Length: 245
Image (tube, rainbow, N blue to C red):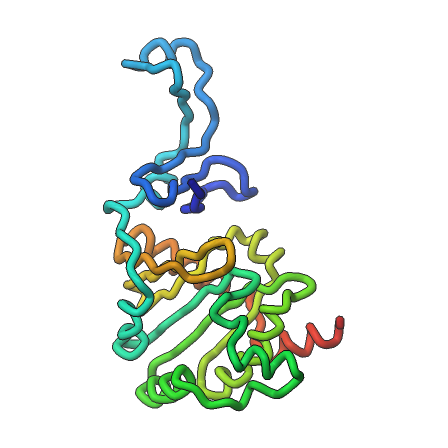
């Protein structure tokens, strides 16, 4: 089963680290192996398959989940949040493309070279309405070098979202990896409700996992603040991409 990075207290990207074994109640702990004979002699009920590592207390305090994992639900069950949030809806997009984009009439028009930035749709209508109420839609998109086809589509389409009032910024994937940002997509509503996407290998959304676990929400808030600091507004980023292609 796949591992999901939870967090680390290491500055240079090595151990110690916590991972979630997706689809289970298990947490995988990465740390320095215990080799001290006196410590090993004091361990109880040791099975032949077990090994032991040490990690700083701070790693567990900061990142260990406080509640049981939630079940996956359909994305339709959380769409009300995009209207009912109080002040901010923030998104991290990490994939190289999305099945929801490919094969749509909008995708086909874009591939023909048409301008898709000015098209009106339900998303942009809602962004305008929430912006009128003083709320903020913000997102950071990771972009490869060179951008994938799916990422170029989102750069062009995103100009229309920006015009509607959504603040979209972009961050090179290499920079995101250096910053140890999460590898999964999520929405964060009002710094309180975390909605994490689950995809298959074809970039199709299988569902979402909703959490208000303080540890998970705090980690998402930290990722948001880091990504937002380094990301570049869409209009400026698109000029950079065009100048190198």
